[in-house]
Image (tube, rainbow, N blue to C red; front, side, top):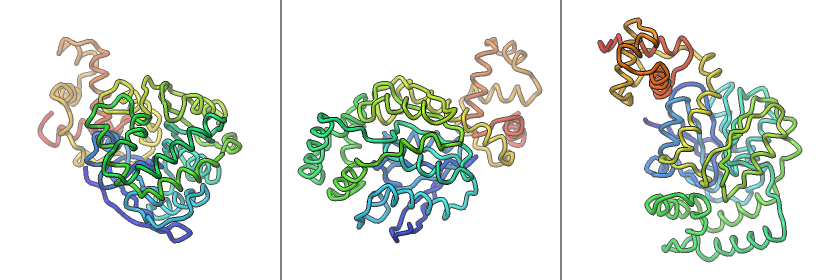
Length: 356
């Protein structure tokens, strides 16, 4: 799945790198600071996000100012500047309306944008996000300790100091995944940027904007998140009118591909985006990629193309109707289709390739 990297300028002149890949309705991701448009494709921590989300949406994502492929010579990491970056990406990408996914520190930016530009959003998703960094004396002590770690150890070749942050982000990771995040911290930004970004975002507070969000909103949050506690996600979901909250059974701030919470995340996101897919143009059957389907999914699609309903398919293959429905749902998810038009295109795709 190829991506196209582009650049735009924020109102203060900072160049922001963004990338587009996938197919389907537009989904703009305001991700956390730990990203790099180029290296994420090689990452055992981020690659599944790119692959699975690209199957259900046209994904637009960007590197924060001072990070990744965006300009590193930056002094202003304020919320106002970061909202300006998002607005610049929206203007450059050219999508009139889109769904917005705010992850982690991208949450306040997404909330502020949603409150200011309700006409642009079809829906809002917040994952592992917060509205404000609530402070206690213990939190202040922890903040001082972490900023000292950044100053002392961020740029060192050894990952000893950066591993503290890695353990908080993905405590359930294996050593390969841990090492990748250790290295990505150095690759994603400089010591000074990491320090300034952390200091300036401590004062962000968009709690007062939550009741102003009018877009349909889905909040996903890991129950055991050690970086941003579950209570923050609950607060968002109970304050944004009509928001839904999906607790995820995980300790990881960044969900990993092999854990049970990941397919739940993808399924919930796909279902939430389904109205956007149904309103989009029907997919071209010739362009559907069937390579990712399993043999069983192809077999069931062939029978659907032959005109059998789910009950008849179940009887033919000696499966339960529910199992057939699950295989079809997985196939449609991989193909990035939904609704009657999308499913018809999937069946037509088989027929045009002589597989029906």
